[in-house]
Image (cartoon, rainbow, N blue to C red):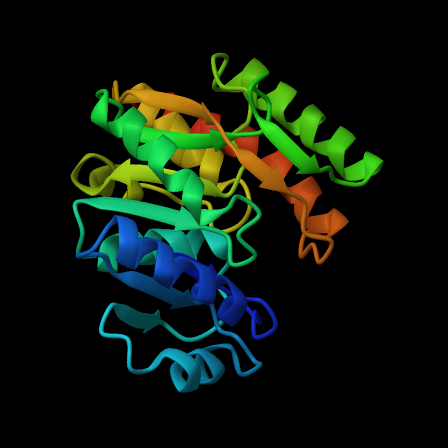
Length: 231
């Protein structure tokens, strides 16, 4: 599943990589593109290029609700037993899916790519200020919510749909802290989470603004307030 918002410049390039890999390695798949209210030609361009692909589906709900909402909607709409959600820029190459599948095969309910493991291969790093902000965010996540996870924000995660679907229906964060909310709920409900070192290449075309990053810190406090007491 690929959540998209105004990704006309990147989606087709990524689909050109996803389809051959999945055809060769994992037939019987679907690629679900969830449009979060794009105002460019993201969906139209993909339909023209790949409309003959029976594995390709599109889902939309109108309006821009945020990446978290798009991922939740996509998990609801997905048909497979396992759901991978990946960023449209494929900062983590699709070939890394096999590593996450191995973790699921060993019993994990959720397998998440991480850039913070000694075996991770970060080939192009973020600019200093974003890298420092990300490390600070992860430190706060560990302090407040998930002490055993070191990188909740890598946009490459695989989950057992049946295990996470009840959690998805309880989630409230629509934007960038949604990863933390999902993983915190998984932790509270005893699901097994595996952090898997992956290849990662920073995309210079970041969509995260300062105001959104600041709001994500606030959401961490809200996540604990919403779910810790209710569990």
